[in-house]
Image (cartoon, rainbow, N blue to C red; front, side, top):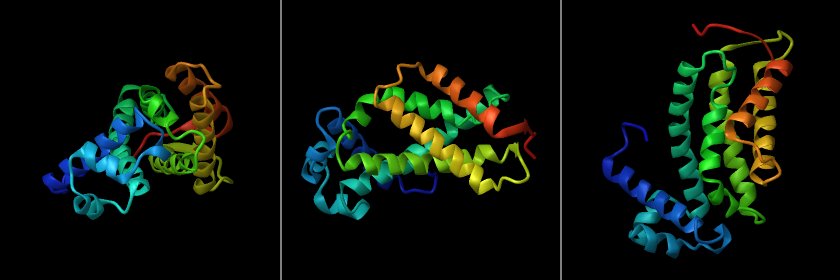
Length: 192
């Protein structure tokens, strides 16, 4: 969470996020009500609505908080594996592997579009930082490269989460990095 956020606000947002996560482990997203979240988080309705307009907004807030956590993990990955082209990928895959049951609660409902949209936004923001460190062919605008990476990675994650890819996170990341290396990256440059 950002350092400048009030501790009470941060505590309330953590409680709401934890409540949603706990509920997703027990029931499908479509079956969760705001009242369920209020009861699980032990907060009042006005407190909830001062932070979110509804449960979809809570999902968006949760992804915003997750982006910050995964950005820190990607930074560590970048330090640990400097040869990796897109170090954001493995922390995202590991997170999804650790919480696969949560993402399954969204499957088969309109909420899966919400989930995939938020996942794509998360990937766009994380990939943007990593792409700054790559040399890409001069005739490929950076925004095109970013959309390519985000689209390919999000589609790969959706396929993997649907259970069609029985790969360990490290294996999935290695294959993604290889495809990016062969298809997008010319040579790695040193960040300035």
